[in-house]
Length: 569
Image (cartoon, rainbow, N blue to C red; front, side, top):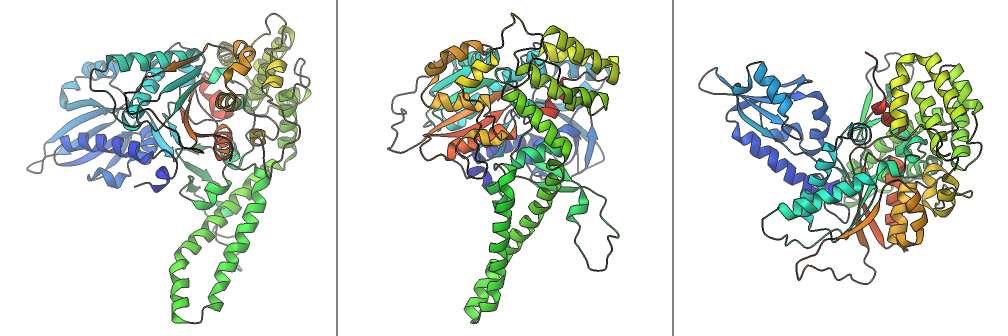
């Protein structure tokens, strides 16, 4: 049992156990010992719901980029049966290809496994659908929206009907419509589970294109920005984690990357993950003193009982010391980056754009980055950020940037620029009107006085900028969206509210002081900084709402732009 999934208001272990049970049922259909051939991409998500030991098979892992299938061996002889499991759905194209190759009939079981929402933490679910944003906004493919609706129906089957659905954006509207249709088509008995969630908020990523482009400044956000977190794991340079031995002179340093799991099961990580990076050092320093003092207690243990008590606490203390050493090393690695001149210059430009300074002309820093051939993704993130903060660029400025990028990085990137334009990230300003200042002022997206150590507002996650998406969630909770009707009309897509009637006896009577539980579903991806901001709101004493976050993909600005880039042939 993954204990960290049951810490929050919603016990996500219930979902994890349900998907594990479904997987076991399929494996039980395949008699005998089994060898599993995985699609490499699936090993990460599957590791979050079912450790390989759970599969109860003779484990022989191979990798294939085309399909994932099982092979079971009859104990009476060398004959093998083949089975195929499609994740998350059966594909007619794949089946046709197998038929063309003459092997489709070889599979005894051909089934699909709907792994729609994967529990990542006690308040976090993700579909890990890499191309969801590109499919929805560039290709007009609604497959990922269907799986989002299906995942939400699964949640309702386990946690009760969600009484109120709010949404903003075209994709949000479509998911809500799919859910309503699925509920209507479901002919089974009424859901008799007492509802755990009070509200569902569906948010399109294109309602807030700005937030993922900015550099995240929380501890977890910076780990993701610099090293990339994949399925709760991060790979780090090994040098900082090598045990220091006297007289070693730095010989025989490890060459394999240090792989660490990052989730709230680790006490220290749960405490610092959502803090602004500038506040992490003091926490680590305080922890070091506490742990040191705890180890010193051994000198005061005189009686057998006291010694026994100290020994019983030793495993926990050693784990805490190991955790502290790891996070001190990670903080040092991050500090090497954040104290560099280039990081400071980039952050300064980002914050100028987000506060509305010089967004309408060619930026000198971006020019220099192109001239020095800095990473193309870095350049694209900055240019797109400027475009979004200016409601599009003047045609002359846009043409200049495009020309410089193509001449420096290659004309094959013309398709990438086209994709960014189609997604609304890099576009000409239409009508000569910049709506961003209105949105910024009304929603208080920029705060000049930010307390990074003891924050009072969500803007601490970007040291001044409050994520637009999270501000919408905050204002929905209190005082409601009617107070920001004008801004909602400026932002893309419709906003709506739907009510799902509950059977008699299941209406919730809230106790005094009891918080509402809102599920916020980001269609198109979410960043760790936005997650941190929602957790901050959940912890406010007078907030009145606790949040659970779901998304099509956990992402950052780099992985987002990468997914939109056309790979040269």
